[in-house]
Length: 344
Image (cartoon, rainbow, N blue to C red):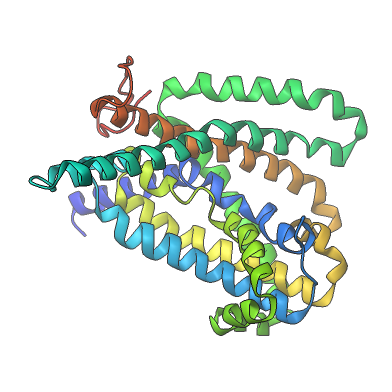
């Protein structure tokens, strides 16, 4: 390998690690609640083999189709000078739709603005909900911490927005290693469980997902609303593309994030096959009792980091909205000399 190629490879690896701390925080913490909502939520289903394999099949193919195929393979190719996000896509459509009717252009614009509004809404509520759920983990340790939950949540959210001025790359350098540890730990917990019931990987067969719907009919689609929690934050791959570039984001997803998520989800499913009573909190059901409190602490850090993915994505969307005339002009600070998409 030449010196230039080696330097380029090291830079890509560093950006991939940083991207792990910014882009994948939200989707990376979904194992905390996705399967729990299917079997212990408002529209919970019975904890039996057919339902477990069906839900796992739906989760696996949601990750593959929506994230790997839709975002990683296709949508991330539709960048606008390196920028991603729905406004970047809208700008591309406008630039290539010259000569089309005004009505069609208006429909495209309205669809783009509507999609951006949904992501802005997600970006507003995600930090508050994620950090609050992280701090509520203190209640697991002691009820005496309950009065501190809301003040600590407010302090952490305040701190999160204060550190944005340092730039996403510097934030990612701090958050990236923590998320790397998170993905390694959840993968190890899942692997330990699936080794005791490896036949759970039969759920990779999409026929189990189809069978799930044939059994539950309309209720199956209600449960699907809980299944899609496994892909919350997937849009950050595209929205944050200007911060890190497509290659590092793809590298992180394909080599670390996707395998870790699949192992953990399937590990939760394997555990439920042998112990259905753990459906009330299957994620922590994987954790040995001696490691419970350290895992609560790590999960709290990971869930706090999950807020960063949406914050960075909304910053990028806001810049694009200003450029397209959909938002009042704001003062924008470029926090990197190399990546023009890293802004505050």
